[in-house]
Length: 112
Length: 114
Image 1 (cartoon, each protein chain N blue to C red):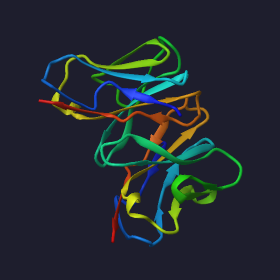
Image 2 (cartoon, rainbow over the protein chains, first blue to last red):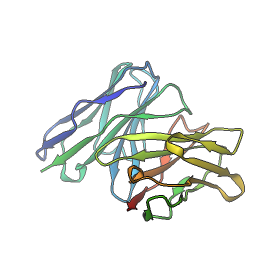
Image 3 (cartoon, each protein chain N blue to C red):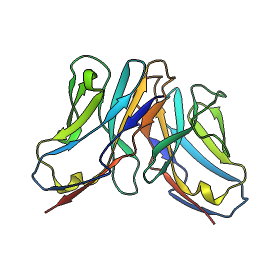
């Protein structure tokens, strides 16, 4: 079975802090994705990566950056957290483009 | 613009009754489609997917979906729901020229009553 793990299930941070969310997949997948999920809005794509050290902006990249130094790990970075970044963050991976995405359990981030 | 619409935000169904969740999409290219389910506090689990071929696809947990190109729809059905089917359901659509990006609907919350 594909396993996608996220470093924290729950995280509480203060406004202005730098926040790292980590995601690891164990299936040698090429593609990795970061989404945020908000009630009534579904999932919105923040960034994705189709190879090591490659990244592409999604629909809502503002206020976020990402890092993919190794194939199995994809990090989401909030340079200076703000209260409007309070959300559920979901990581996903897929073996190649145009294929099924497999999701991690999510990190619920609260920014105070 | 590409979009995915799940018209029903919330559905209440009795245990043992049938369930149908609607999904409509607007895509310029040939789409591929998914239904995912999310239990409270969890990530998304794949129920089923359509890439090509037979337009009626079977998934896990007794779910099926039918792709209707003429109606731009991919509705999810289950003949008899169980209390454990209470969850949020998401339809997602991608296109072969979209670098693997998916567009998700806003979700439908399903409540199952005894």
